[in-house]
Image (cartoon, rainbow, N blue to C red; front, side, top):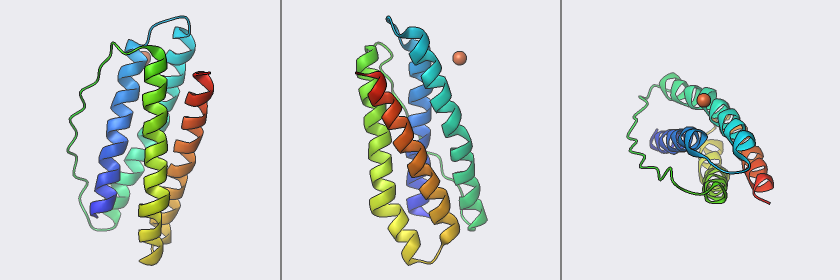
Length: 133
Ligand SMILES: [Fe+2]
C-alpha cells in the first residue's frame, strides 16, 4: 500500500499546485493558462479519488500527508515548466516503478488505474510543453 499512498500524495501535491497556479498565473496568456490549469486540476480530482478508493478496496487506508508551499509569484513560463516536470516525473515513476510492481504481484485492476494515470500525465505534460513554446 506504501507505493499507492506515495503516488496519492504526489498527485495531491500536483493537484494543489495546479489549482494555485490557476489563481496566480499572470501575463499575456492569462486566459488560456487560467483555463488550461483549471482543466488539468479538474482531471486530476477524479483520478485522485479513484486512487484513494482503490487503496480502500485493497484493504488499505489512504494516508494523506501533504504540505504544499507554492510560490504563486512565479512567471507563467516557470509555472508551465514546473507543472510539465511534475507530470513527467509522475509518469516515469508510474511506468518504471509502480506498474511493474503491480504487474508482478498480479493486480491488473491497479495496473489499469495506474496506466490511465500515465495517459493523463503524458497528455497534460504535452499540453504544458506546447503552451510554453
Ligand atoms: Fe477558478
